[in-house]
Image (tube, rainbow, N blue to C red):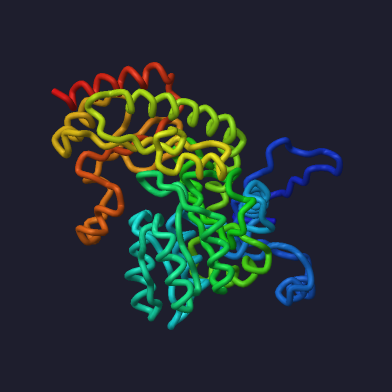
Length: 390
């Protein structure tokens, strides 16, 4: 074999039977082959397991899918290149022209866009309510044939809590599927409820380091089978190296989530006691209007603490500029603490009435609590609050 040929067909190294790596290798390969054409054709007919093209499946991404499904308490999973990708591909895979989607004002901006604008262009209608409007949810599901109910809990950014038992009960009675963006709550929560599809941004708590993007749709095997072809053809595939980094991040998921929640609870109490703060949105506080519901549904209350400053937009700007340990950046769930203001959150397409229902004010700031020392974070926030009140 000449050297130009050899560099394209290097020697193979096989791990001997009974000899295993402690960390699974990254299958950084687009293509896989079988030994014979007959075996290739058997695979393409679905008669044997294996891998052929990484846009459809890959051993590294498959390991991540199996782990996430188990964590969420479901049978199967599909991973994507971003959290919004998981939302978009789920919506496209599960709806068609003439369908109706029930969604909510208290949603991540890109999710609202996908339902209202993208699906709308393809003939999918929607009704948008407040997640607190239980009577409205019941009325819509009773009077309007609905394909999907898409919602979040806790909601982004003001941590409203959806009544999961009530929503799933009403949706099931109406023959609608429920899709829950469970990113804020994490993979270990809400699995006991009859949610049909969980979507997650793996960019957040799964990765934990803020250096890789990914998304996931998690459901029973039957639904994943129905969605798989569309996901593959849409092409928003998670790269194997990104999947490896997310698998590595998940090793510390529970340690990180618990520590961040403990720090968030402390920060929420500090904020609640400060005279410059009008309101704190954190479901772990007894003062949260849905604290009792959150306590019934959740093991942990999350690492997101949102608060409203009495001084409005000017106070929010002074507070944000004074923060030293909180990066003014998007995302959440990573090891570093982050802050965003109302102006950074978007929502400008909402009507004045809808903006009021969203709970976001000009003085709203959302904090994502990281893994810095809680005392350092508390001191930083206290200084920033004093600056906001000046």
